[in-house]
Length: 177
Image 1 (cartoon, rainbow, N blue to C red):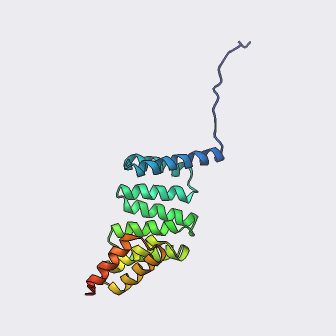
Image 2 (image 1 turned 90 degrees about the horizontal axis):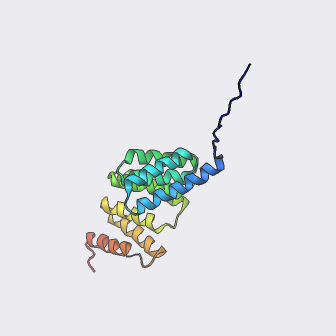
């Protein structure tokens, strides 16, 4: 003989993959905004969450890398960029971000190689060309630095950092006028 039992069965919402991907992009966007406003630790936590939810979006890996870089976790940031590169090796920003990290670590050769890979994808990126000029200036190869600063100015004529560094490279060559 059985007795009647009354029970409440809880309802669980299981989001679809599409919903999770959409939410991960929103979380990633929030992480990027926090990074912009200087909330680098909070940004890192949100970026990690976004990537945990959606490991297949290279943009989220890029955001995570930026947050890691801001927190000076360079090794982890380079790892995140490798993940992004595996997902989409045609994204120039991946290589420009790698270069930025290598420059922070004073690894000029690696920074130069990463910039060159990015420029193969996006050849008219004036900021990347300018950074190449900066690398040559740091290496005291003033002739090459002048070449890249002139190339930058050709693309973006009023880009004052390139104009300024061009003058510096000329000065270092003894070309005062």
